[in-house]
Image (cartoon, rainbow, N blue to C red; front, top):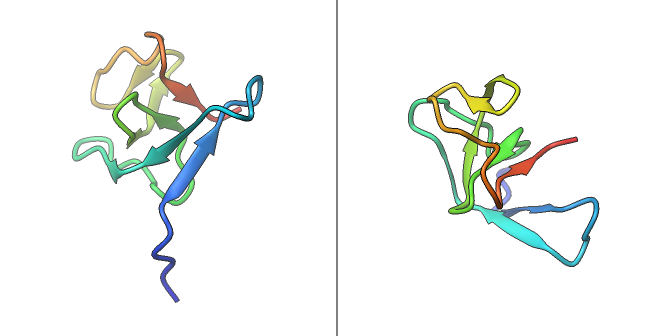
Length: 68
């Protein structure tokens, strides 16, 4: 069964803060059901290493969410 509920991620340090995961990056093919990194626009990415996504985005900028 496929869930139609959107994925929501929360900040560990601020549980009131959340972000809806809207889609997967077309290059990274991030997993929207269990994202590793989520951009400020709600795009799921995969990591190439600390701070960089597979598609080359700098995920150290403000408001990027990282799974701990």
